[in-house]
Length: 210
Image 1 (cartoon, rainbow, N blue to C red):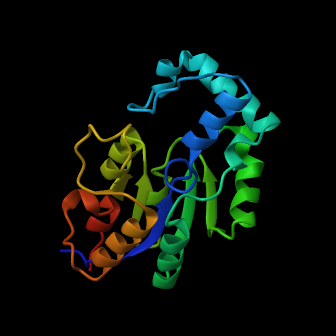
Image 2 (image 1 turned 120 degrees about the vertical axis):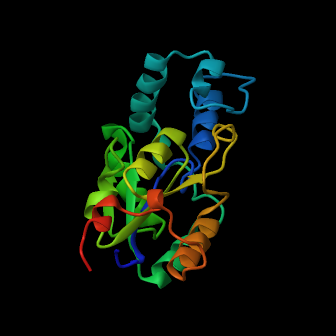
Image 3 (image 1 turned 60 degrees about the vertical axis):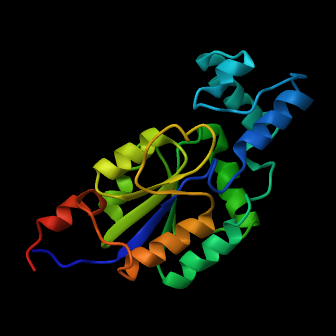
């Protein structure tokens, strides 16, 4: 047996969870590159529908983050402040974990500070499962990429997918529409209103004697 512990550490993705990246990118493409008739993203590699290759897209991210502060030009998404405050009031540690390019690191920290969304930890990494190894007890994370969701779930993190048209085709255990809904979900987990499942428990805790 193991002692059922609470979620003490929460991971929060930036783009598509806190920051409206698609809106910022679309404005840049329309205003600076004069691209028109850009369809709304319906899958992760949406840039292909905008006429860009993988290499062109990521080169654009690097250049636009330097010349136009692409990752700091918009305000926080709806309900971010409310969800952030709710999580703070729960007493959990907040980890912002993002795979943004190095050209966006400084502006990411500045943007969070300017919008009074200062986390306890800020991680720039493609391996978001780092949260499973740094949490005091259990950990949870919200992300909009189904691949990260799967990796987090496999690592024992309570994974939650932020719903968007580019991930709606995937079946997941937990899906929310805002940071407020995510905070409410975490509160329910910690209040035992939602039971733990094996994939929701940090695996190393299962091995600890009580």
